Image (cartoon, rainbow, N blue to C red; front, side):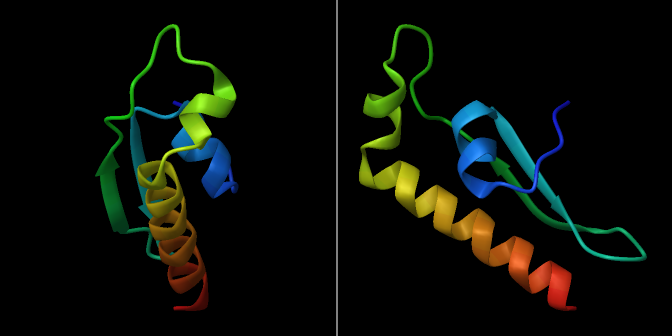
Length: 68
């Protein structure tokens, strides 16, 4: 388990992302990450549109969960 407040870092490092709401902590998002891993260059992983879309979804959910 790795805890971060960075959507970019979560998508880059994670195989599954869980975003929690404020008190009481409930699951706002449970998102499996299916981006290629292994011998993939860091810049190549961040390049595809899928990475940007996942990052945007996570960032939006984190902001919404923090505001609620």
